[in-house]
Amino acid sequence: MSEVQEILSALGVALAIGLLVGVERGWQEREAVEGTRIAGVRTYGLLGLLGGVIALTVDELGPLLLAVSFIALAGVLAGVYVINLQRGRADIGITSLVAGLLTFMLGALAVLGDRLVAAACAVVMTLLLDYKPVLHRWLSSLQAAELRAGIKLLLISVVLLPVLPDRGFGPWQALNPYAIWWMVVLIAAISFVGYFAVKIGGARHGAAFTGIFGGLVSSTALTLHFARLARANPAFAPALATGILLACGTMYPRLLLLVTVLNIEMFQPLLLPALVMALISYGTALWYWWSQSDVPADPLTSLKNPMEFVTALSFGALLAVIMVLGHALQTWAGDAGVLVLAAVSGVADVDAITLSLAGMSHEVLALPVVVRGVMVAAAVNSVAKAALALLVGGAPVGVRVAVPLLASAGGGVLVAWWVSA
Image 1 (cartoon, rainbow, N blue to C red):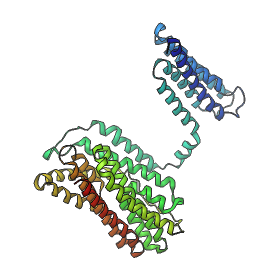
Image 2: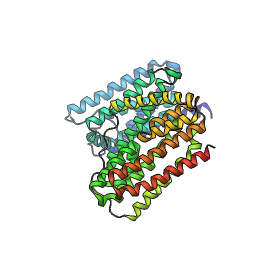
Image 3: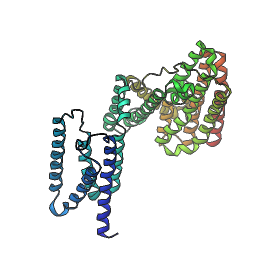
Image 4: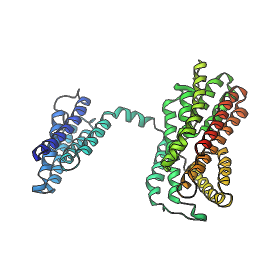
């Protein structure tokens, strides 16, 4: 491509960026009286093209011209904004003003930098402008506790994680602060997403929807909650059993995702066992779903916000203890000690032992041992949830849940041993 063609292509992208933003802004303000808008389709197109043209002169006239042009444009748009306010347009916001300035800069970026980055930024900006009603509706429904939870998630991930040392401390150099906190962040983020998925779906989608996304938060907590509901409302037992099995089925792909993020080599040996366990749970849940017609309309979720800081710290502490025990048992009892630890840990929680084993797979443990340990923890956890459903929910929901969960646990362990042999 010749130099002239390159220039024309870059200016074409700059113009297209302006027109894209202008179409969205023009549609949003289509009912405004002519002359009262800060800018329309043509103006935004010209702003993008102006940024591109001025960027062409940077090599000859220097970058100061671009800065001065930006300041001058900001003054002009601000002046139009003030005039509109004086004319009684008190409801006008500064969104169009900011969009105009950003359009100018993206036009310049299309010429000076990466056209693909400029175009991508323009698309994102247009989406943000167009989704104003959705964003405002979402913001109005946001509770103070949820906002604080989001800020805490940013605190533990963006602020704390980068400053932690990435090396081993303590016995056997088993405690890596960065690795431990990274696992805490990973669990917290998945739980956070699952919490909002359940909230957005609500009770309208019944036990099935709640079960699928509740499994992202805690399949054990959801099993306990649904078992209690089944005890109080036996007529809902089939639907609640469906929700429990869907939550338990969701646990297996979630575990596969977690260990793959930490060690991509674990994906292939864990895929088949996790698939077997998930299919047994999901398949039985679907059979229950098609065989019963009434889905309870009552609210089925009482899941708490998963990002309480004490919970995150407790998980980190548990993770640290398991990592030390894992190294100790590996040293004292070999691979058998690790499998015993996996079984004991799986009774209460499967995430901590899974992430610990995944972290140890890089240096300490052989991959087959890690695969077996993860599946043992998952199987024991499934058996524990089957017992929980029977003891708390009674026979109507307990039998429906226990049989497929026990089959899932046995099938997963057998396949894991076969794959890792």
